[in-house]
Image (spheres, rainbow, N blue to C red):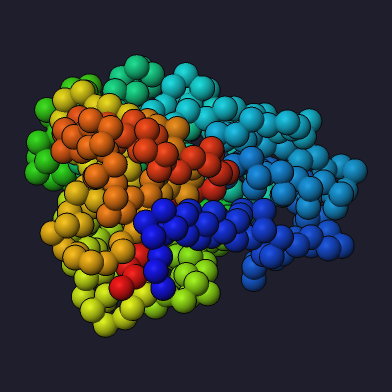
Length: 448
């Protein structure tokens, strides 16, 4: 095939861009959500709007704005004169227009702020006014954990809450472990919004940024039953020595008698609640796989390293790619989910995707000889850590080109500054916020 490194990096970028186009939230909504003659259909779910006095939308997360916009377009023409669409949006995009009775908050991410608390107060206040003649649509996407937050203990300040989240980000905990703590800390997570909505009919539409089958973790599951427990919280704090990582006031609360258990699947509130997953990481990988096959690649999807430490994940995937490349001339290995990077000391610019890509590039000489290897790692939300990039592409030339600029990639890894390096190399993937969040995608190409 004669593919050159520059060509492979470009090919990786093109597959990623086309994949993101295929999984746009609005396209998925157009396929799944319809409203005809006052009946709203969401997949197999069905709601007759005339059966309700109040129609409410609560939209939270990185896809909050396009999701709410679409529902508003569907619902408003179908409402009776006595009905008016009301609700709250908390998202990362700027909102150009808002229905009269829907309040917008610009969501903070990845650390909550004053706006996060104000949004939580607004949402919970609205939900507590609903009754059996109310219909509430919860439109939940990834990123909402920080965007809407209020401690169960109101004496814990915004600053202490932010320190709690910052500690979690640097703790090396998996998303599953973080959620156990966040759900029990929060007045709005782990099913507590569903609990607040009381007798209302509830429908949650999810854009999932969590492992398959774990929908209760999207934005820390504000409207779904929570399988985690207070006992798990205590065990996690002990096992991971979190007293040295998280604020003392938060540790004291989570261990104290006033910390309440989250609503479980047996709670009566969920008898009136349904949920449906609109998009997920699985759909993201399926779209990428189809595009890679069109380019002539043999495609393998392997999500074994979801939530692994980045070096362990990279070494596993590179070994897997080597095995596959011995069997096929052109291979595309896809891996979804997230990896963990534990930060020590002061961090530079970057995120887990760029860190993974750079580390992988440093290992290519060990695993491959005489093969053209390309690596892409990127977040579907368009944001990687504290950088302006979604991720990066790397290949067999990355380390050589870095050293030509007088930069030692090993030092960059130690400084957690991969974002600055990839920007200088021209290999950062910059999309801006995508209005979506389906976790990360790692794409490894091999051509013999």
